[in-house]
Image (cartoon, rainbow, N blue to C red; front, side, top):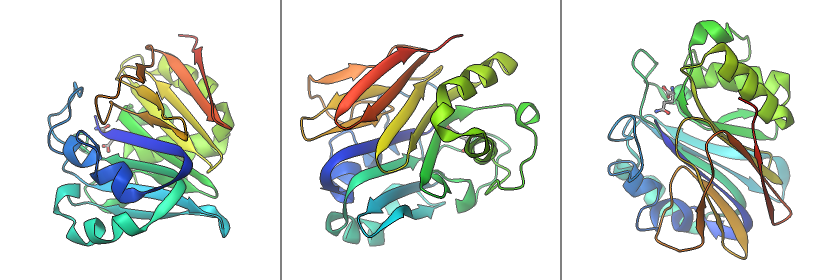
Length: 230
Ligand code: GLN
């Protein structure tokens, strides 16, 4: 399983969000605390973030470990955004190793990350997929289906592939949607914004675990958590 994180709130730097926290994505790339599948996330990383000048996000991805990226570490403290989505990758066996297979996947304003695995024959091919990686195919299918309908998309896929792990994290710059479906997920309401992450990046007592098979919706500072039909 990969690890991912999204922030929606007052602007924070990519350094503060990804590299600074004691158990943040940088540390999770070699020593995650709650990961059940795979020990490290050294197969790449990616970040997408929004700026006021345009609705579509900017994106930076790599197929190398986050801890080895000195150029990113140099610029990350100077890039700030009010909406950020980032991931570190542990590639599923048989999936491509290049950066097009690393989250976040992009369509218009939307960014998507997937912690997990899905049988690609359940999805089928898709002309808009950025890669043949299961997560990229899943992203293309979701963007085609309608990103706002994340809950019904995950419920339907879960029925068709009961072994699937479908922790998805999605944003359009104004809203975060996330599912917990067979792996860990936590939320932190930090007062000036909300973090949704695979696991807490520090020991702040305000982190709350999202229950299994639930949907998280963050918009205008409010967090709503609802149960998904199994
Ligand atoms: N299946 C996806 C990939 O290969 C995600 C893997 C994961 O969550 N570890 O990249």
